[in-house]
Amino acid sequence: MPGRDASLKDAAPDRKKPSADSQAKTNPPIETLEQFLAYAYSRQGKRIALKPKVEEAIALGPQLSDEARSRLMALAKGDVLLAVPCQLLLTVREIRGHPKLRDEILSFVRSVLEAHLTFIAPVLSNPLNSPESESALAHLVEADLAREEALKPRELIELRANAAYCVGLWFVEKRSWSPEQLSQFLYAKFWKRQIPESEDGAHRFRALTEIRDLAGLGLACSAFEKQADQQERVAKTANLARDSALERVTTLEASVEQLRQRLAERDQQLAELDQTLSLERERHAHTRAHLRDDIEQLRTRVVRRLKAETHLLTEGLQALRRDPPKVHVMDDHAERALGALQRELKELESED
Image (cartoon, rainbow, N blue to C red; front, side, top):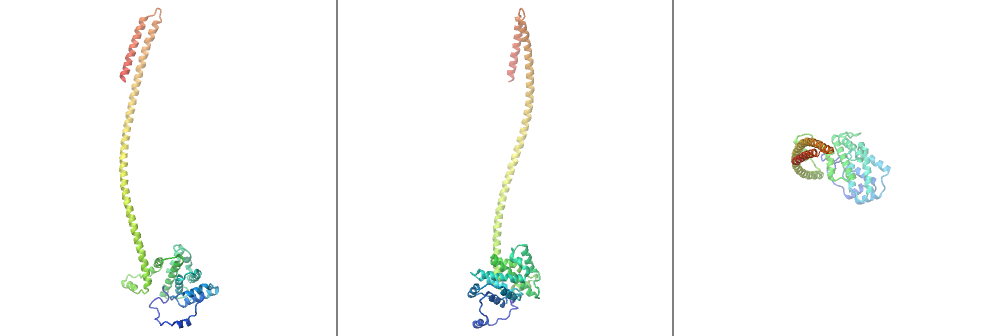
């Protein structure tokens, strides 16, 4: 994690480490949380460690009072590059079994971040993809973060980096982010913007070969490699699903074509049946018309025949009623009527 002395060019030359006795005399024992936080600021962004005994002592001690918090905030004001909060957030990850101590340090770090970067509060409180968080993160990487202090360009870059690292570590703690998620966040919100805009190969090669934090670089590359492998697996799965879907589409298209052919055949059959039915209806209409004419002719003929023979029988009956009766007239008319009726009956039988 970069601090003010993260760059090798700006780093002070190595000095001989003091002995354990001299350290004990120089650094008083840490017994309270205020002392530990003050010690962290005395390190000016260098790595800090919380030994188990010190952790136990601090956890059993009282929480930060308002006076202690004010004194620590005064120290934090001097850390214009936000180098110390990064180290504190990393230390929080190492605390085990003391949730109150973790919460107290996180509360202090949040106060420091919100005091130093007044726009950062929405990022710490809202989902990362919310409009408030996106606006604050855009301000973090684009706006002029310096307020009263005049920062050099390299210091401004370091401040942006530390602020981005603090936000990322905050999400690691509060949202249980994995190293891969942290790498993706830092790349999207900060690292990508530091890529040299120049297309000069020498400039890009220099940027690549001047990397010194190999462990961090390895972790980031490993995270991206895992992400690439995961995306490759997702792509393969998607390709298999696509091929399966295309195969199903081909099968469905063949089925649709078969159904279309069957429907076309059915339509043709229906058209033929409609034509046949139309012809049958027309033929039936003609037949009914002819039958109606035949029946009318038959009825007319039978009625005429019955009237004629009825007239003969009536005359014969009148002849029988005369005095004396004329039987021969009745015989003649009856024979004529009977003959005519028999002929009509034969005609009707022959027409069947």
